[in-house]
Length: 534
Ligand code: GLN
Image (cartoon, rainbow, N blue to C red; front, side, top):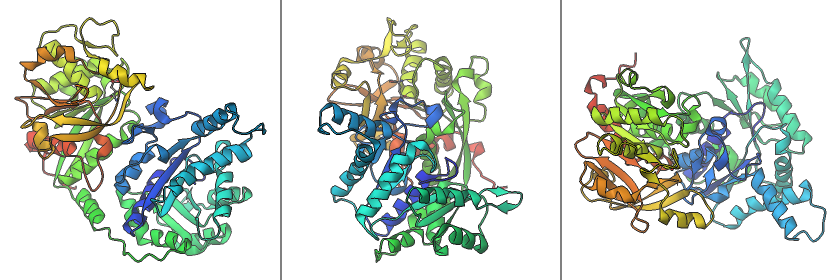
């Protein structure tokens, strides 16, 4: 639970704790409660809430689940992200079915019971030793009261030493001093609701002194060693390491009366940080998208670039290019000194013409190009218009009345829609054409699974126009015939994928498509390669 302000990094803290406990030999699951009334985050505007992270089973979730997967190297599922919308909907649906036998349906006990049931479902799976529960929002918000009450009840039901309450707060640094008052208030607020924090994690800009620790301990009822420093870092991946130095994981286990026998081994993690902090090269990748003013909208892509850059010992700088501003007469200028162009996923009409210009620029100038989801669709439209001569080639999403819809809704997909959804979501199989670039990138695999989140597809009625061209459809889903990936012959790196590889990139397992995109981008601009730290 977080206090004082939002955006303190609860997701990263939960993921870090999960990673430390997993490294101590325990099986961990993380459950995120979001106290808003959207039934799932799929409908949220990325501008407001950041990226929608898609799990293997096709659930549209909060971006924190991306942190969990990247830190823990584990897949999450629909059980791992619950919103108030879903909780209330379940309770109201139950009421309509008469399940509550005429009782008055209320927050206590019906909503709180439903919250506890969702936690217990994961417990009952018996697959995990410890479940980490992250409550979205901030202590003091009206919306999170039912969660706090549920946690209070659960703690009591579970009995001593079977749960631990971790409170993340902010220690503001004002006029040369660290202030503990907001933390005291937040802890007190929790106590008013019957919860005593067992461990307080303090987000801070600067190191906190023993005095401050003792003060927090005394005024907030915790032992000094249970006040943990969470300092701002260059990169989020340093956080588990810094927490481990303070024995964070061990203290949590100790509080749960679990004797850890496995020594935490963070060698791989440390190597990653060392490599990240000591790059040999530097390149700049342009990301073209329409949500560029709010970077969280592209969280997984940014992280995948960090993972892949680090793997290649390359510092990847990102130049954000708002697709709305790209025009014929500024393309060259905007993409000056760029080593590679990534056209980002997206929805709706806005910014499409700019993305088409960026794609054309990459194709014609042999600049490494990576199109993800909408980015692949743009590559198809651009090629159809400018190379195949289908002047009015369009996507049905952009122009529903188009007579030349190279991107459209396919029959095989409409069958999926009949099952209730309107998007192709989650893991789908993709068969890769042997000896294509993609085939080598995926280490000669002919079958892969990648995650999807889109409505429209390459229109197979146009396959014949592409079959003799240099744009090759190198990835296909054999069951549906849907095109999953394409590449250009005679180009240094021009790959478009209908799926989202960024969701599968992890700290210790960077995604091969990103690794290769970065590697080739570095080779393409050999003058830009030496990284001088000064
Ligand atoms: N808007 C496109 C579609 O729905 C692409 C979606 C995306 O980029 N995730 O098909």
